[in-house]
Image (cartoon, rainbow, N blue to C red; front, side, top):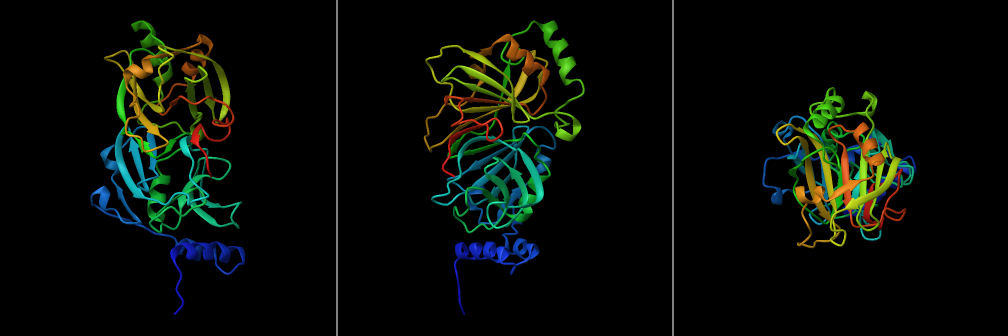
Length: 342
């Protein structure tokens, strides 16, 4: 009997689709279906995943892909609700590291690059082809840059993500922690102003109702660079405002952080955020985000005004020590890529 390794088998599936030898259903059936298990994370085998959405039934979602561990962590309202094995980019097609937001969702997507190959339950991260989707999991990095998931897990993940959900692809990262900024976004306000603004912007949008495009809420990301002291506001991937960022102690790095807006914090008269630090390497000494970090920032009044118009749970604030130029940021592609070898 002829045998072949899983790497060759995956290639044969794609070739079979291109030649019409395999149907879409046959290819999807040959993908790693996966199984839900209840075991320690460090004992997960290829195709295994843990899924406990009841641990945090509502709130903003964040996805962290740990490339060295070949694991995907899903957090909702700062609580980890799922972990899955995955397969990232192979040598020569490395998965880029950085902060991305979901640009498109398609349950029945087919690749325009690789012979119309099926990519079920696709969450697109870049228009150049990086995405989360169902695929083969051989137990090592084997994709062309995408993050392959077990079919069953990809189906579940598809139900909790939305356009604008942040996805962090990293070699090193911290667990989400809650921090509270005493005031509104990048600015301090008197108590009566806080109550007026939160009443205006959060009255109909709560952490229990995550903003969706079809519900009329745009996906909003705020990018801040300590390297160039710039701030940009992106809505649905388009720049709607930009200007100067004012950073306390500008000689000190901010680090690479993601802050996800949770809800107003009435006791502190401020906003509660979930903060995640990440790093393109396995460096153990990278800075963890905290309240002091976010308090170092402010911006031009015109930019802050545009941010206030778009405040809702799930709004993403990305800090970076990288410049915000086209090599590391694209208004219609990724948010901030630290390294792109795909």
